[in-house]
Length: 437
Image (cartoon, rainbow, N blue to C red; front, side):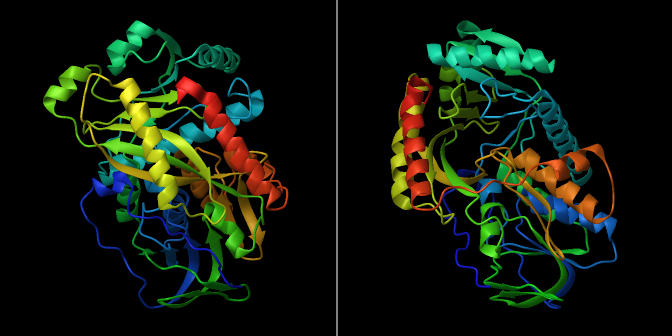
């Protein structure tokens, strides 16, 4: 079957552009492998590492249409959230059994990555500093109240913060109330993805800028790429919404883009004007509000705009509109510092499903997949990739049984009704967010 749509992210990501240039690793003979993994994001990187540990004598190809970190792995806000984050539940927690399982998965992913970073000496601005969920409006404070009650049900640690405490910590008086949870880790996501790619086991060959243009399912499975035809016995798809290009989940996967911007580095004088802690992260009470970070290298990140792009690609026009909202959000929060340029603005895809379910496990004979992490791609993607490799190696665990027991993404209404509905929903909720944005 032909692959109609390929990833085509532009070079606008600030996380990537502040890193040193890096030459991509190319596909090289032989073009036969025991395992091929398509998609070198956090899920694919974890699957490749774990599969190599289980099968050290096997040849594993990890291929991607772009360079590592060009896609969603290098375009998110860099939060490794340990707690459940169910946006469909009023208290962000929802069903307690599922919430506890999700928390176990998230914390396992953080521990897994922590161990790799320590072993491989990967530098990615890893900061175990927790996160704040911040409220600006009365409606936002009500959301925090609901979230607090959900955390009480879950029995996890948190601390409420008033406006004065927030101002001292963040250097802005914009927020009225905050809810701090200590388990979140902040990272430079592109640096994390690159570091993991550079530290892959020896029996994994990374092949970047190797788009799959055609796939034939059989024995063996045949993948056509510009660099040659690859044959493999087993295929793993860690491609998020692009799984539908390979014939799976039809219109059940929704590529929703979020847009972020990051400033140039603040001067010492500007840092003193802002005040506050040298690094922190705050997510909005309203899911359509602004996520904000101060990074260890002294930049401010704002993410606050959404769009639906069914082909999995964004546009320059949407990014230009997003810049206006990002600049507005920055100026509202940091009026004390003037003439601060938003140096980079970019979009990155979330893969969502209507029933908030991922896909995981066997897709057809000798084809397996993991994806659609519904907004927690760093943690959920990482642990899903590891567990998929464990599953293929015949291992058993409570986490693995939980993943295998979950429903798959549910079908959506047909297009163009789907497109109209999602675009109207995104527009309405962004307007409704008001000052939270």
